[in-house]
Length: 286
Image (cartoon, rainbow, N blue to C red; front, side, top):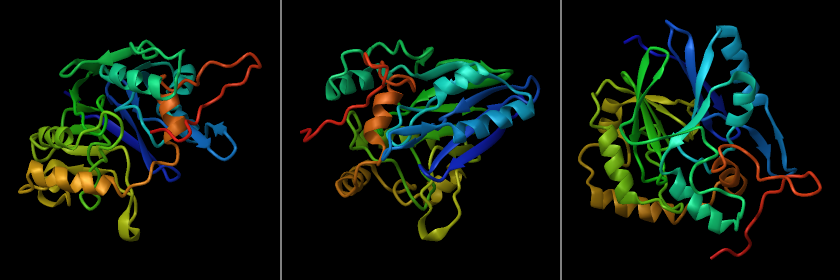
């Protein structure tokens, strides 16, 4: 199997990394975890980040087969529908997105929202295999941060979403609806059971101590040095640490708009009779 060609784009506003993964033989590609720029103060969106990805895809002569999401993000809005309009491709996410939709349909009293994943073009089951050109891809269900998190394994490259961060930053929070620290620990051990040279491509980096952003590490580096889950740290200790840490964390700035959009595969709620789309803000939600 050919090795994947990977071009990554870091968005400093949301600390998000979008990956373009292509097969150098066929020039077919997938775009993972794209970003639609959104200003919560004005309610305005823009496409500058997505347009950088489009420019790269077009310059490289790539044909986009897939617009992949590792999960329904809480910290940025997906640009998948815009990229689909401009470049083609099918929007895919893990099959457990149905569970996430069910939760947030109630949270936002979103009567229009489906809970069958119908907004997405494809829902991946755990262990499902598919192709990007001649590249073989396996979807691994790695829940814990959310119930629907996936890792996409392509040869010696694994795209882990928010499950893991760089070793000096640790692991994802587990206090969103459906999150669970013990489940996350088991998912991480599943990822870290891959060959030690496997490259792990992250969806975010929050650089501590002023270091430059990074988003590629290896299984070996994580097992040796991850501050939360390196070898020798057991499940009970991880759960205790993660639970205590999550209680100190504020909500992501964009969580309310992001979730409403991302569980709809990046689409806004339907426009109202004045032609305007609105996002809801639950007040004093218990």
